[in-house]
Image (tube, rainbow, N blue to C red):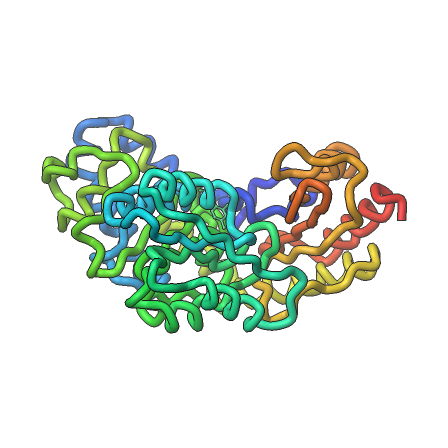
Length: 389
Ligand SMILES: Cc1ncc(COP(=O)(O)O)c(C=O)c1O
């Protein structure tokens, strides 16, 4: 059973942003750190690579991907940057790169900068919110694709809106003619991920969110046809074969991106095991119970604040967003000031995003194994008071 080190004095309804890691997994990470510090050179040159291969096999099995195509990155932002930077010289001027308005700001920025460098054009597809069915996502994305499309970037689970995108249907329509990069930052551990069945060119995700691994652990999975030219966003020894121990040139370009603390990625296998033991039905039980709880939570909140449910249950994973009445204070960045008020006045951690523009806002709740129905009831009470409803 996983033990959480979360502050019991706060209500944690934001597993989405940075995850939370069980104590048992942090102990395993500490064990790696102590071993590293007992002899940094022998750890990095001898222990590191076999331990990394164990982590790679564990993650590849969890997401049904090929270990040969799977490399570690510190986070999904790095994964998206790696794909974009590697694609730049392969994109013809005048080509188009597609993102959506539900995309994550940091990653859409990475795509924009690469488009600028390649003299390509960014096409931002407007996906509605609220929405009733998957066609409202599939149709506008497919309508935006043409013979100039160099890349389509889709989130598996969207950050501000908490929607599980129908990536299977979209990738089946687009690949292999149009390369698709899936930003799965939230997906593994929240919803089933089957990379072999999906067949996307590129899939990147975090292990430090819903897989509950330590922070700074993510992966990038690349289809075989793109591995020869794919590099990490940071160029290091692997670029000319200078990193020993990796099983391919592709792996070598990511296995060593300069000295860092590798203990987070080496502890991913431990996170997968500890969490699997946490629920009698293992990971499928965790995903199903988190999904049920977040649906119950969003219903409690929607009733309290008089909001409509913006998406059907089937399009929600373990995070759910609701529209709030417009803010009187415009937000100057991605977070709305209400988020800080809920933290300081109520000790509730929950993200409130300015979306789709500075004048409108969404609240997004999460459900993880440490949450209870009472957490959402408390938030409902706090919102009624803060919004003066
Ligand atoms: C869809 C999406 N992409 C990327 C990220 C970035 O994750 P990281 O900061 O770990 O790179 C997030 C984080 O919330 C996200 O929701």
